[in-house]
Every structure is written in C-alpha cells, then in structure tokens.
Length: 508
Image (cartoon, rainbow, N blue to C red; front, top):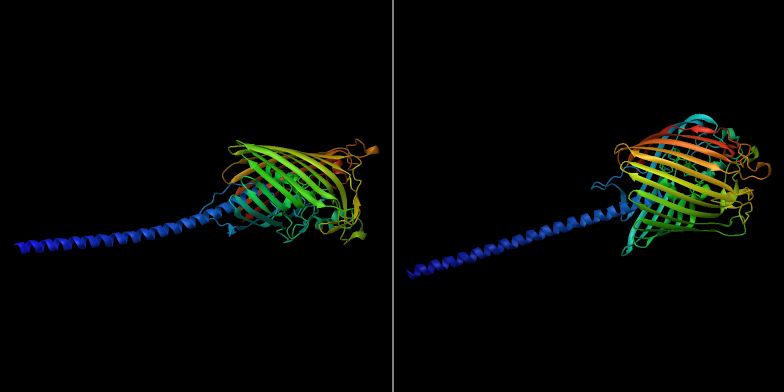
C-alpha cells in the first residue's frame, strides 16, 4: 500500500513539474508575441511621425504661400485638409509646387498677345488698347509659376528656410519679362503694338522670389534675398480678387505693390523681418540697393518700409509705409522707325513715398475687404545719367524732371467673397484710382485729357465665379470693366475696355 501511495505521489509531482514547464513555455511564447507586437507598434509610430513631419512641412509651405502669394496673386480657395493620400511633392524637407493658369477671352479694346509679358495680354484698358479681339488669356487669376521651398530645424524651435519661384507664360513657354515686352515694340506703329508693360519680372531665371533665412515661432522670421514688398504682401491679403491680372487693376499694375513703380513690387538685395504675437503682427523691410554717382551701371536706389496689423475674431487690419529712392519706370516703347530693333529703353526716375491702410471681416460664408493707398512721386534728389543698367536693359534716355509738382496717386477699393457652396466662390470688387493735377504754368489745375499732367481717374468693376473641384484643379469665369478719363486718359486710343474670359488652373 505504501508503495502505491509513493508511486502516486511521484506521478503527481511529475505532473506538477510538467504543468509548470508547460506554463513557462506559454509565458515565453506570450513574451515573444508581445515583443513582436511592440516592434510592429514602433514601426507604425515611426511611420506616423514621418507622416507628421511631412504634414508640418506642407503646412509651413502653405502658410508661407498664403503670406507671399506669388506672385503669384492666387485667390484663396476652399481649404483641403491633409489626408493619408497626401500627394505633395515633398522629399526630405524640400517641396516643389506651382500653378499653371490658362484661359481664353474677348476684349472690346485689347492688344495682341505677347508671350514675354507676364500677363500675356493687357486686361485693364491701356494707352495703346486699340481693337476688339478674341485671344489666348493666360494667368487670369494667377501668374503661372513653379517654385521650390524648404525648411529644416537647426536649433530647438528655430528653422532654416528658403524659397525660390519663377513665373512663365503657359502659352509661349517664355519666362515673364515686362521690360522685354516693351523692347520688342520699339520703333513700331502704336496701332500694331503687342501687349507690353513694365514689371519687376524682367526675364530673370528666378523672376519671382528668391530668399533664405531663419524662422522661429517666438522670435519671428528673418529672410534675405529677392522678396515681395510689404505693400504687395498687404495687397495680396486684402484684395478680394487676390491681385488677379484679369480682374484687378492693382494686380495687373505693379505700381501699387511697388509704392509708385511696377519694378519695385519685388526687390533684390533685401532684408525682411516678420514678427507675430497673439493677434498682433508687424514687419520691416530694407533694400540695401545701389549706390554711385549715376554711372553706366549704378544709380542711387534703395527702399525702406514698415508694417503693423492685427487679427481678431474674424476682423483684420493692416497699415504699411514705404519710401523708395531712385525708382525706375519704363512707360512705353521708343517711338520712330529708326528704333526698330533698338535694345535700349527710356526711363523716368523718381523718389516715392506711399502708405496703405486695409481692413477685412469674415463671417460665416461671407468676407468683405477694403483698402486705400496714397502714393507721392517726386523728382529724384540724386539725378541719374543715361546708360544705367536696369535688370539687363540699358536706359539710353533718362528723365529726372518728370514732376513739376509732386504727383499724387490714390487708389481705393472694396470687394467681397461669398462661398455659395463648398466648391463655388463668387467674388466681386470695385476700384477707384485718382491722380492730381501736377503740371506747371497753363496746366496747373487742369482736369481734361489735354495732358498727362492733368487730374483724372480710373474706375474698374469686376466679377468672378471660381469652382474648385479639388486641391489641384479649379475653373473660373468672369469679366472686368475699366474706364479711364481726364489726365489718366491722355494719349489713349480708347478709354474703356471689357474683358469677359474663362480659364482653368492646375496647382501642384
């Protein structure tokens, strides 16, 4: 009996040991399974962090584009949230982006298409607008461009940034070149001119912005290079048409973004600082510029400006002051058959000061924007001699005495947007520009078109419907009516124009 009890006890002990061994084996298996799960979770976490970094880069690029809006003059459309199918062209902190804007339209008094001119055609009535025509109408809402931007953290909370953009004509493939469009018409009969106008884009390889710097949420953003002026930044933020070439006179003319001169809407050799704290934001900009005695390549030219504004509960307001010394304005081609093929141009030099005040309010599906700008142009304190080199073009004649009295340009505008649906936005604007009588002698106080020194005005109304299919593609249709009178219409072939047109934009 004892032997049976001992044998049973032995069997039970072996069973216990076997059970314990099985339990240990199960624990080891569970541990390995947990380890594999942790490894899988770590991989998923790393992938999520990588996507988050890509989101941060994309959001930073979007914010910067909204602040600058290149030129582009893009009308803000429906925001599209990030999804797991995000297809932004970003790699290791570098993002490529751009817009192609193409359309067709009709003008009551237009000028033939010019593939060099940044706008392709002249939408607002111009001095040489001469006949009705159906034509290719590029860059109606946005200057077509391609750009590259980058951002990388160099210190905790401090990022190094850069941006480069260049504008082009999508119908001709040529780089945007305002000065080139004028030079091409030298010596021709004005009735045969193709579209031409002065611009800050002069055929440079990078004719938009090109800057680098550092950015901090606490200390602000400091950048160096070729940059939009503070005035142009403000126009882009407060013009309901987003400075669209086909629908905004302050878009197609860089005079207002350049503080009196189209070429100065974008400035080389600049230092720009932006700061934001809560609802308050401010900025300052200085162009180191050119200095010299007025020789063949140099002339006294620089710019200084400052901005302050705030945003609170849907309401925003901004004010900017700018002063430019030695601004260069190229108004028209050289006249006379002897100038056919002449590669030089004629310039007017001025010292300009400008100030701008703007406001906007957004509620529900509505947004209202308004602004006022005052520009004073005076003869330069430092006269410039002929032969100066301006963006690669030689000025063979120079006028340092174009303003017997200070010329005062005033621009006021009001516009609004209504988001009719999540995809469709309706936009309307009115613009009114005035000029004082700044002549001498018999022209003092004149208000007719007998001379460009007389007072005058420009009135523009425009409407656009923009339908956004997705973040990459939208179509639009609209028209602008413009009419000029008094001194602002002096020498004009026609004093009004209307430009119904439709187009499409592809953004990437």
